[in-house]
Length: 177
Image (cartoon, rainbow, N blue to C red):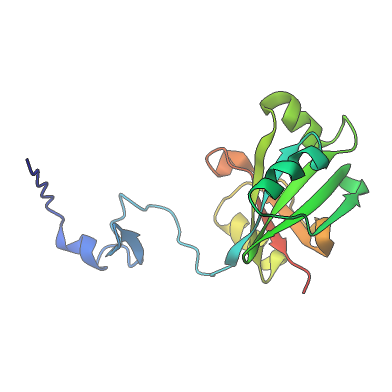
């Protein structure tokens, strides 16, 4: 049995008389104001997924899993300002970042206590971190960090509040060259 669904879409959906935006609806240009009433970002600020931060109780224990699937830790460093040990595992152009708390007061320790081990954040690489944060403010996105701060691997970082991102903690990251 084959089911065909037909939807009538007003011509203004198909490219732009209403609202003038260039959002996509199922791969097609769509600028209908009732579907996309927000301001569209005019800056293409995100280059790639820099890394996925995974909260773990022990980097050494977690490393055993990653070795079983053919991935190896590239380096481990301590980030005293965040009360963390961080291990970097390269995966193509991105990395997995294992986050181990060095203090019960660290945000990662509190995260593990509340939610258990697992994905803690997703980081996007940006070229200009202050500009990206300004664009977030312009888009009414709530920030945790209003200014860049030092992060692991020599990167400058800033976090966006999960309340603005459907429960996901995102980090903007200006990677060290």
